[in-house]
Amino acid sequence: MAVRTERQPFRIPKRFELMGHTVRVRIVRRDRWRHGKDCVGIWDPSRLTIDIVAGQMRTLTEQVFFHELAHAVATMQSHPLASDETFIDQQGHLYHQFFTSSTY
Image 1 (cartoon, one colour):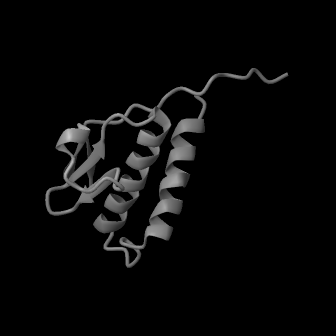
Image 2: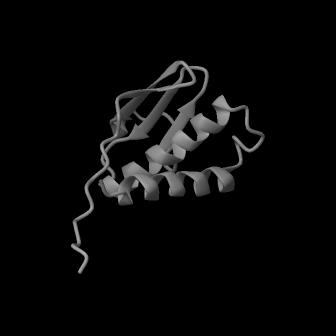
């Protein structure tokens, strides 16, 4: 009989490395958000930052992080679909599922 364990929340990193570059992750208060009310996250390749708007449900914040991570990875790879939102969203969902469903 399998033992069911509760899903552990993923911790959003403050920074990480990709191909020798340090990427910073910032959670930005809504009153300081400058990317429009419909945007909840953004990857800035010129600054190597991922910004995520604060105050969302935990699972949404995780999903936004993995979506922006997919942009960052694809950009670092010079992937031709780095700006294709459908492709990036699928990659982000796969990253999210892998990291939040893994058991150790």
